[in-house]
Amino acid sequence: MAGLARHVDPEELVKKLHDHPHGSHVRGIHTNRAVSHTTPYSSRYASSTELSKFKIPHDGAPADVVHQLLKDELDLDGRPNLNLASFVGTYMEEHGEKLMIENLAKNMSDADEYPAMMDMHARCVSIIAHMWGVQKGERAIGTATTGSSEAIHLGGLAMKRRWQERREKEGKDKSKPNIIMGANAQVALEKFARYFEVEARILPVSAKSRYRLDPELVRENIDENTIGVFGILGSTYTGHYEPVEEISRILDEYEKKTGVDIPIHVDAASGGFIAPFTHAKVGGPKWNFELPRVKSINVSGHKFGLVYAGVGWIIWRDESFLPKHLIFELHYLGGTEESYTLNFSRPGAQIIAQYYNLIHLGFTGFQSIMENALANARLLSKTLEATGWYRCISEIHRPKGQFEYQEGVEPGAIEGETSADYNAGLPVVAFTLSDAFKRDFPHVKQAAVSNLLRAKQYIIPNYPLPPNEESTEILRVVVRESMSMDLLDRLIADICAVTETLMQSDEMDLAAWQPFSKSAEKEHASAGLDAKDKHKKSRQPMHKGIHRSVC
Image (cartoon, rainbow, N blue to C red):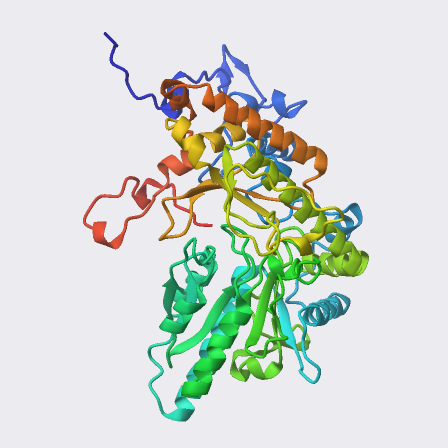
């Protein structure tokens, strides 16, 4: 008979059993270890005193000690290059890194103090506008942001204000704006709607619509209160490009019928630095300023723009599409500048690094990097399907025009192939256990694949597809610039090894690969309560002193 087990609180155990040999007097001998040490590990912080975590300490600690102990704690993080969950770049060339370090102190809000940096900002806006097909005679306008989330909010707000101005001019009600997006939209798009009081009409995606915004559902859900449509150039779930041109035609037809002009904002957070350079483009149709209905586009410089985290871009095809009263004229530190951002102070180093990449790599450099990423993503996809254990939801490895997974059919290579020979999309591999595997090994949960790979230091998330298709879970790998052939070869070998381990395991063995324990911060922080549960007592009320953070 099994004995009773009790919960063990590791923090309480440490506190209870902690030895305190270094008081102010030990056997009459005064100790000065509080201030004197030879190395970080000979200081009192190595064993007798813990670094303060949740309140600022009364006295500071030596710089070398704090640096070493924080460095040690950060060793618990994943390795950035093996973080295959993230679209955000984790590698920059040495000269780009040097430029960033040399300019870390520069603030984008101090335009008059850093005119050379602001000139580089203006050049980036111009380069990106031309990259996206700005038309002759148009006066494109844009700005750097802290990322695509801010850029999306700015683009959405401009659409809302233009809609309000038009409704006011027509003497119509302007209290019920709505915006169209797919259920595959990144959370920033829904945040815009919630923060700026716009009804989010989130349309379901399906296998039939290839997990993208369905143009026919757009047709059914637009009306005179629709401020715009968010189209996504690269779904974060599966890497699919949405059919921007097809949606544009539907909006053209609607305007012809009703006189209501509905614009498109393209969220090209990842695809904005891929589609312009690859042979595949977006598979044939247009997506950018070549379509008159596309008024604004955003991109993340810190994704496939190959800059470290902290920079995004938004461009309007013409300054007439950015309402004048949204632009602030700032008289600051001796200069005057026009500003349209949600932030004031922003890092300037990333702007310089973006300009460096654009000039250093040029069109052919970007093209080589993006074609390499797509080629490696295709190889990973084909290999996974060739095992018979997995099928890919993403489609960039299938010949152009072929979208369905064919069980038992190994996709071959095309001699002299480029991305143009395949379906267009991001270098993303979204895959799931095949039906045959699930039949043969029903006890194997897909999450165990992710957890076992995490033990090998790969971060590959496992999560459900958007609502309406949430019964399908996917594992997702983002193939970034730094995914070399050698690393890819090792990744494939490790995925195969992990899968074989699971096939040879029984249910009891697999129980060990459940989600791991939370940190003290996550376990004890105030988690808040939903409005419907406000009568209940919070697990950790705020008065306990450990306050919740959001990211």
